Amino acid sequence: MKNRILTLCLFFVTIGTIAQIDYTRISNKNFSFGSYGRIGVDWSHENSGSIGRRLNLNNMGSIGGRLEEQDYIELAPVVHFTPFSEEDSTEIYLQTRLAFYSQSLSLLGNSTTSSLGGITIALPEAFIEARNINNTGINVWVGTRFYRGPDIHINDHFYFNDHSGQGVGVELKKMRFAAIFVSSTDTSSTLPPYFYLNFASGTPSVALRQRVVSIVEHDVHLSATNTLTLLGEYHHMGGGEVVDTIPELSYGADKGFVLGARLITQHGLKNGGFNRVALRLGTGIANGGDGGLSKTWLTYGAPDEDTQNFGGAYSVSFVEELFMDISSRNSISAYTLFTASKGAANTNHLAKTYFGREVYNRKFDFAIGFRDMHLLSPKFKLLTEAHFTQRMDGNNPWAQCLKVSVAPTLVPTGDRNFWARPEIRLIASAAYYNQFAAESLYSPYLAYVGEQRFGYFLGVKAEWWLWHN
Image 1 (tube, helix red, strand yellow):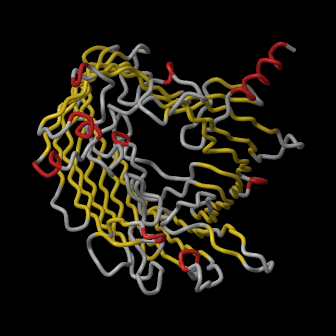
Image 2: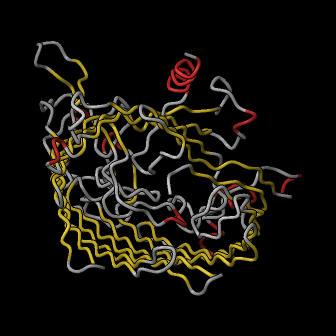
């Protein structure tokens, strides 16, 4: 009875999921639990001392390294259901995920949900999935989930097929079909707005419209070590009624397409070495996100001034990622990334989007980086990172940053693996900015300290995940 009460309490207090990480280390027949997070302290000696600021360039998120990221915690219980028949092979579970983070630079331990810029609680996943129904290999799911493939781990960039959102999907062996439904009650949304003025009832009222993202993926096993994944998406948004007197709430339907291919080559090395190469093209409203986000339903740029849609907008994304063991004591992860995106407006620089807001209508992102793990002993590693990133917004010059990080790391478990967690890291990072980045204060660090060519970060951070081996 006590065990049942404890299990029930855990379920209602901590909601998360295993969709991105397979959380089954702490489990029984009906329940499993996992967690992922980063937490720690950091500081700067600028302006009489303060919380450390991220050194990466603006609008590139964690691209350029993520060792300096702020606190973020996920709690992830999963409820398992047992088929009525003991001979039924169907696996059924409810996966949920509860995420905690701060909207400001406040430490989680000093914040509450009621404090200014305090703790935000999100539910990015809550879905039910039935797998291998009647031993047919068919999987069915519905709900909201992180529906995506692997990321570049050292900068947490899900670059190819991040379909995360609320929807429904069916999987059959090498094929995956899904529909993601996107809408928002945020009336400041401009790219494009998810609301319009509705006259269907005879009385003007604001109504929501949805973007429906139809997705198909197919895996082609070229050999025992090579898998090619083909991706296709179609995006559609219905239009609101045209109202001449309120043009800011008048626009027609819009659409977009995505095509992509990713080749994964497994090296079969000690820690599962691999090489991944991905190319993706998006058009119309499916021309991708920004700020380091790569979801194709996050439209970039401004619409055409005359048609007020995104016909002619596009994005091209190329990523290559490598992981391999150099020796019994050294493993390396490396990547290169290039993205070119353009909106539909007839300009490369600033253009007006819905409601008169100006945004850049073209951008280029480029990044190259690596992380080396050197095993000093079963419980100690030395992590070394180097990243070069640059970004061009509109017709502006390139903003550039070269960053180097050194992180002596304690591994309490004594696991000699590159992927061993938890890790407790003493982090020292230094960055060099070009003149344009420094003058335009093009990083969170520069926005705080002012125009400088050099920046630094000091901190002690922990990262963990709980998953099965």
